[in-house]
Image 1 (tube, helix red, strand yellow):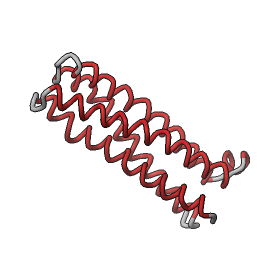
Image 2 (cartoon, helix red, strand yellow; image 1 turned 45 degrees about the horizontal axis):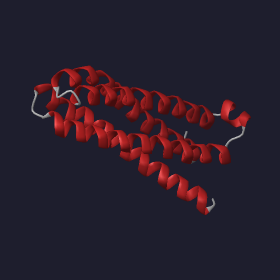
Image 3 (cartoon, rainbow, N blue to C red; image 1 turned 30 degrees about the vertical axis):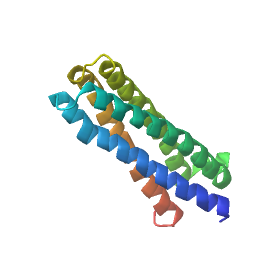
Image 4 (cartoon, one colour; image 1 turned 180 degrees about the vertical axis):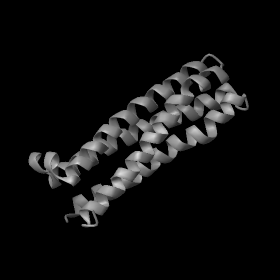
Length: 154
C-alpha cells in the first residue's frame, strides 16, 4: 500500500469519526437542551454554525478521500460485482443521505435561532438529526464490514 493510500485511509477514518461524533452530539446533547428551552438562541446559533462548518468540511474530505480509495482499489466490475464493491456503494448512498439530512437539520435550526427562536426550530430539526445519526452510525457499521471483507473475514 502506498503512502498516499495510507494517508487517505487515516484521513478518511478521522473525518468519519468527527462527522459522526458531531452529528450524535447535536442529536443527543444540543437538540434536547434546545427543545426544553435550556439554550439561548445566540449559543445555539454558534453551535449550529460550527456544526455546519465541520459537517461540510467532513463531507468534502470524505468524498475526496473515499473517491481516491475507491478509484485505486476497485474497477467497475469489482464495484458492481463483489461484496466489497457493494459495501462501497452502500457507503456512498449513506454518505449522500447523511449529508442531505444533516444539512436540512442544521438549516432548520439556524433559520429559527437566527430569529431568536429555540424550541420550535429544535423540534423541526430533531427528526432530521435523528435520521442523520442513524445514517452516520450505519456508515461506520458498513465501514467495519468493508474492513472485515478486505481482511478476508467475511
